[in-house]
Image (cartoon, rainbow, N blue to C red; front, side):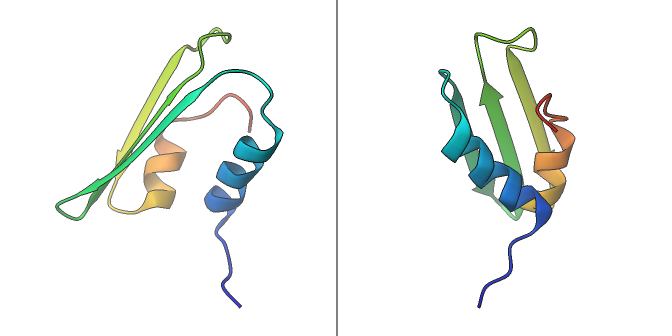
Length: 66
């Protein structure tokens, strides 16, 4: 069975439980991950992160829900 990282579990939780509008962009290019989260209803309307792994990019956005 595939084990998820903490960051992947947070992403799945966000997708399942978020009842407000948001946009999530995940890009993998040239061995580097970029994650962007846009949630217009929050005080932090745009959060961006990047890193060599998805987990590091996710942690880099410092989401307000964690």
